[in-house]
Length: 355
Image (tube, rainbow, N blue to C red; front, side, top):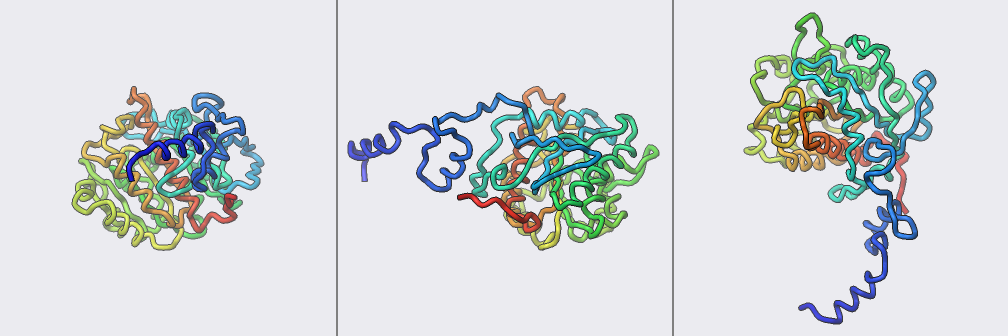
């Protein structure tokens, strides 16, 4: 059927006088009704106080936290004392909060997580010292434990990757969790330079602390000259997919493998921005060429719908090494994708039902 004047008139009658929020498809209308005012306006993306993913801000008293009806808490962890190369990831939370126009609708997963879940940006972990790495880890564990103890799921923005260890200690205290780990590095190295709490060893520490199940852990995107440091991953029984295997395996096969490894049990999702090739994310402390593309990462994450997520993080965004803000933009999009997955996680109950 070709184009004709009758079709044009029908479109004019339906759309000619309405505003952008007047939509007819129920899937789109349920999002628009949350965003647009009755007069057809919506909040400008560059206005207001910046928060993660433009989520509501909820001030929490660390001494006596009241999380109310929250299901997911977005929190910043601005600490990079564990880096082995370039510093600056302490500015990651601020950089991700400043990114605009992420969401609200995930067209692949057909959800709008800020509206589907009771979620808020609860600010940053309060640190007693900006100088002492081990003390910072204790502060992170203490703060996250208060979140998980009341049944709220933490979704954190670092900060360097060492923050994952104290977070896992809080989440896996009663039962070790599985993990989907997307990174250029396995981060299962041992102690050196008088500490084991650096960002190259959080997952060795977590396994040895009994809070991470290595047989339910898959590490995706691994590459670079530090491979010899990751013996622990192989010895402990982790599944490793190197970056060079991605093109030959294909993303669907990697998704299938990840789902097979973690099964139905509680699972943590940790995303290091250096898993992306530096062409997409130069703003990080330990960049490695030959990495994943943003398209591959989005396909991979969206294929994890239904995995039993109990927490997650996005780490190692160091914005000062990226004049374009592309790295922070990619990090914020990944944060949105993980939050979208949490809409479908069996561990998150009492979901808001759209009408």
